Length: 79
Image 1 (cartoon, rainbow, N blue to C red):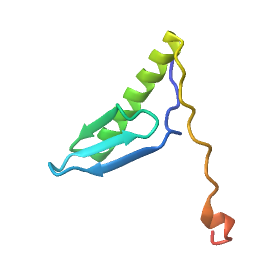
Image 2: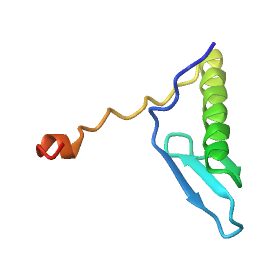
Image 3: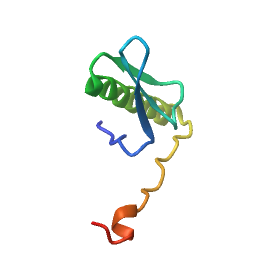
Image 4: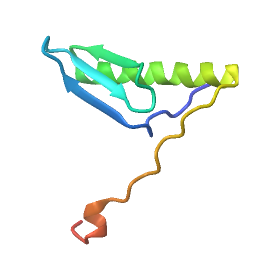
């Protein structure tokens, strides 16, 4: 079963060791780490999907992704 988990609050930064570290606010215990930016994100997406499935099967609560924020530039008429 594939689940779209890309609506969560993801962050990525480069560590002192030159590796990319991807984290997600809704699941602070999960991270993706790689020397390649996209690989770190994809690793984290897979970990979040696995955690959502685990929680679903265990009957545990699943954090909802935040509501989509309006496009500020569009709201201001700048696009």
